[in-house]
Length: 324
Image (tube, rainbow, N blue to C red; front, top):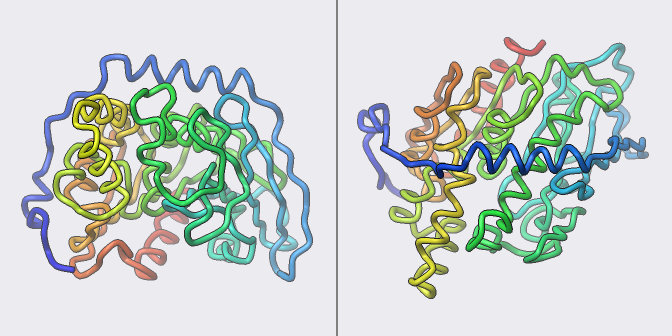
């Protein structure tokens, strides 16, 4: 792992010219209106776990096209009154796993909603939500970046971004949650989804934490890294050169450089200068495009771990200052 991207001075100046799809706003307005019209109330069923200091609910809510999405809701045991809520999204290939894998935010006094990732959860943490879209069910091993990539309307990430927006919008329906004090967080794919939710959700968000986010300046990413997941798209275009333009056009609809100008909540980003999975120039492109107040933590010697425990501590401080 070495420095391979722009220098730090160049990154602070890096504002690439990008061209979003002409119908981007209409595309997402229609997609989210359809999901909201098909929505049913969220259901939260308390579950027994070995955790004596955490109360857990198994949550089901409706995401894209009214399809059922699973989540965990962890609350500090014995908490009194509605709590600020942190909605968290998961990295590429992982699912919601088990409740005991998600203790940080509940230990800090928050209600913590962890959204399962449709069709994922067979690579490094298990998942429970299928993807009943036209190109798959689930869970399955990666390949999501190219699933349905020739048509924005059938694209996997259209469905997943919609799920993320809906997770934020239903958080206030859940037990013990104060919907007026809401933050979104995530790392890698989860960091990209946190940015998407902040850009598209219909409810106020107080804070955004996006650690080494995925889905940022995708057209650049596929030209400067050989690492998956972006390399999945490279391999697709190599085998189907006549379809490469259509595939890249589809990814424009879920690229954070095009969506984040709509966001207004204060945001904390991290970028790692040795990150070959989500190259720092792509993260900085989304950071500079972001519409609200923003801060960036840079980790010169990190790869995709993107700050590790140091960034977790910084995230707790950032969210507490805005949400508690």
